Structure formats: C-alpha cells, structure tokens
Image (cartoon, rainbow, N blue to C red; front, side, top):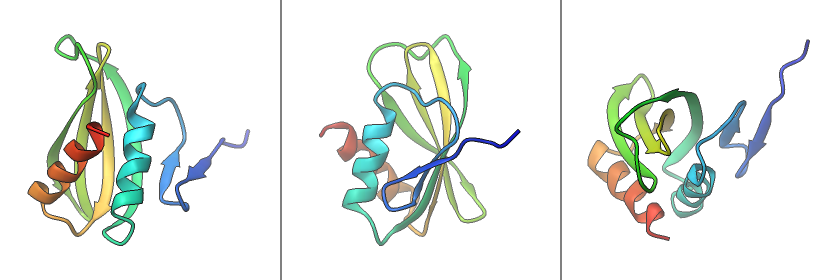
Length: 102
C-alpha cells in the first residue's frame, strides 16, 4: 500500500496525516513570511491532552538536529511540529506568534 503525501507551500510543508484545525494556515503563513529562513516543516503526531483548551497556541520546544520542535495546542489536542531552520528559538517563537495574529 502506497502512503499518501501532500506537499504544499513550495514543497516546504509536508502533510502526511491529520493536522490540528487552523494550524495549516499558520504554517503556510510562516513559510510565506520567512521563505529563506525555513527549509521544511513537518507536522507530527496528534495526541489528546487536557490542557489544550481555547484558541490555537504555539510554543517552540526543543532543538533538533536541523532546527526546532514546536508544539501546537488546540481543541484538547497537542501536535508536534518539526521545523528545519537556522533561526534562533526566540526568532522562531516570535515568527510563529506573528502568524497566529494574522
């Protein structure tokens, strides 16, 4: 069985499964605003959590080999997001927050 892959935003946003409501728009906006700083975004698994109420929230979590892991919280769920970038944690967090406001 072949896996289903959809790449958008110039091939930099890789969606292979479900994504939290509203997150796709934020990630596409992030890529539009920072096309040179971000080389790839891969949303990870979604897990249910109790503290994810209200509107979508994003938080840069830990460094990875080629960038950062961020977490998205909304509607009782948490989703990991792997962002390949040379941006600092503070710059990436500010960029994510500005995309939430648009």
